[in-house]
Length: 149
Image (cartoon, rainbow, N blue to C red; front, side, top):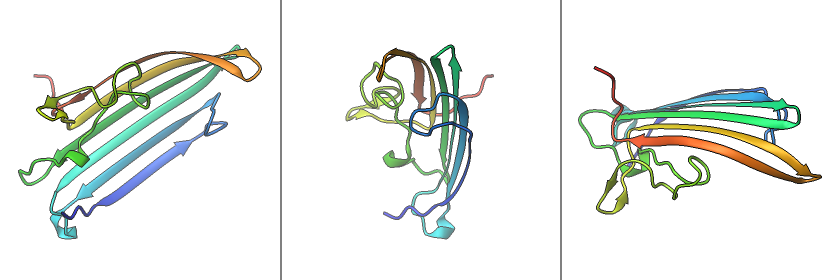
C-alpha cells in the first residue's frame, strides 16, 4: 500500500519552557493532502489544529489546550485505519482508557473522521520539586463531521 502526501505545517510558540511551561502559548496547524498524482493509493485531506495557553496566577499554573482534527477521504474511498483519529488516555482525555472514545466496531475502537479534545489543568506547587495537578478533560471522536441543520 502506498500513501504519498504533501504536508504543510505552521507553528507559533511563545512558551517560556517547552517541557514545563508556566506562561505563553503554542499554536500549530498541519494540513496533509494525499492525491493519486503523487502515487497515493489512498486519497484524503487531513487537518489538525492545536492551541495551548499557559498562565501563572499567584504561583498556580493554569494550562489550557484545545485540539481539532478533521479528515475526509477523496474519490469515494474508505478512510484507512491509520489515518483516522483516536482519543482517550493519558495524552488526550485522561481518566478513560487509551483510544476508548468514539465509534467502535467488532474489533474495538474504529476511529473517526473528526476529533475534538479540550483540556484544562491547574498545576500547584506543594513542596520544593513536588507538585500536584487538578484537571478536567473533555473530548470525543466522531464518525464524520456534522453541521447543524
